[in-house]
Length: 210
Image 1 (tube, rainbow, N blue to C red):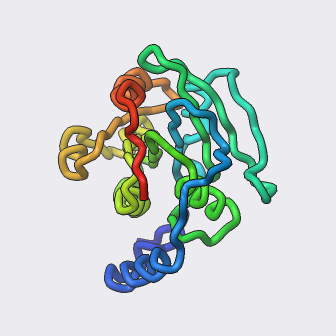
Image 2 (cartoon, rainbow, N blue to C red):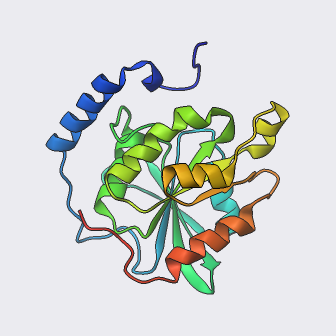
């Protein structure tokens, strides 16, 4: 079977992919920016490849409290908004679509640089439930650089129509990170997502240093 909507990372042998990633990471060390793009409050970044419902989820969480600006030095848009979660105002950033932390487009480079230079309390990796295994490669990369990650398995309604079922608890146990299954289109699972995000915004100083 041919994968049509990806960069064919699944066709690369594990050893070769690991070597590429190790070489990239060795040559690209980043430090936190002193001129942060985001305000000093709990900050959540939405990350994911194009067409996984990430922006729809962003709109559901933030409502009308959004601004769009270019990432510094580029023409790439990054959307910022606010949401009330666990009684606190948090900043939510909708990053440009990306398939990997090894950038192949300007959008991917902006997303990667943002993740590696800004102080982020939580990364919500939004993936398509219909292509779960293929999209976990980016999840593992985010975990490898020690970012706090919550996996949001979106488009559950479409997956179920195809006979695909996702065991949220089993996946959570296997990965060792919080997992939420949802359908942003059906507004299903949004409150569960907010509840799990609340565990991060109510605990101070969760951002990692690297």
